[in-house]
Length: 179
Image 1 (tube, rainbow, N blue to C red):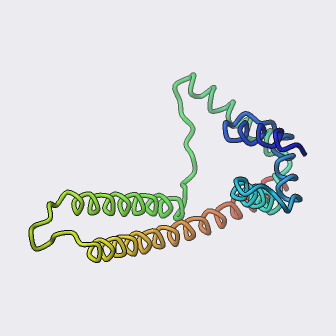
Image 2: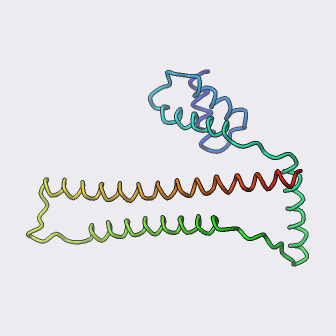
Image 3: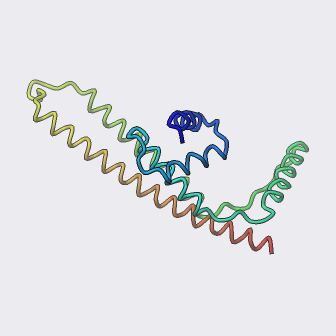
């Protein structure tokens, strides 16, 4: 495929204006092409991961679109009448997942606040900035950032596993409904 065409499709992809067929073309190009330009290596990795993710998605249960359409229509008609649909209890994982997001956001705010406070402090004569001290402080800050980032990644992995388990339960329930 022509480099200019790929460049145009990438620009449109990141603008969110590509069609499904154009996205498939990009995925095929980056999956099959071994010698992509250096500036597209990150995109190649991203499209390969998207291709993998598409292949591992569970199949959509038959009739799901119709049932969801009916539920949306019912919700709309009840909203017009002033009533609301009561949704089933969300379960243990949804609240836990929400808490993980709050904990992650709080950790990020705490980290940003502590870095900001440290940067606002004026150095005294004894704390004059030397290259060695600057290096040590930078290394300490990067280690703290890496540690906090790793905690966040672990929390996101836990949340992702919980989401996958929930999706499996939803699929089993929908399959039972279909039967």
